[in-house]
Image 1 (cartoon, rainbow, N blue to C red):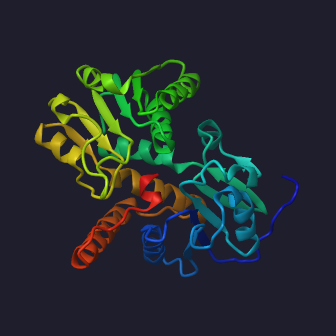
Image 2: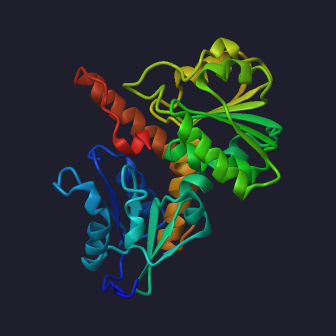
Length: 313
């Protein structure tokens, strides 16, 4: 883009752009870590399009206006990860491959889009399940988060990746794109009705759907098809111990909960926006505290906390 925007704000003023994000935990998570690191000029605001009555179709214009007002970086969440792209001057290689952006860095007046959903899951997998067998993996869910997870699995070195989604066309599209990016891997779609069969032979399975989240109870497939020796990852983080994670643990599977991905992508985003490497372990502990506090508050009020669209990714 020809227009370069110059921010006159020296401090870190970060905003989260999305719709229906009023109860997001991101501001508290980021600001607490900034305080721990001594970044006194760090501020993280919610820029909820719903509360500002801004149509999501105007995401690109809204983002550039936010930078003109002094924002030095932005997080982008549902449903704006694709809509923000026309506002940007440059995309990282991963963001270009995924066709989605969740972090915007402002550098020398240029808006640069990144995607840390991909790097977040990859880091979580390597940290939380080191040595996990990657011969054959089943991914359930091919939406925005599922697409990022699929690329992360390809980057991790999965040999055979099967992808299932309630929308077969969406699963097929992700398969085509991931296969093109990782030609050494075999990437194939699986019909939802055939997930149980696929589970019989895969070494690992990832849930990238909202099923299991607070307000969306259940599991994405019949957990009776799981077996000891498999590893199971869930990107849902409220609750951290989903029905899927609980069932897999009881069966003797190695598990990776959604808090690992959330914190890893948040840590990557924090580093991109500030140039400072955060303590991911500390952020994970703080996330647990935040979730517990919010769930206790919701319980005392007599109702479950409503998930934000950010949490649905």
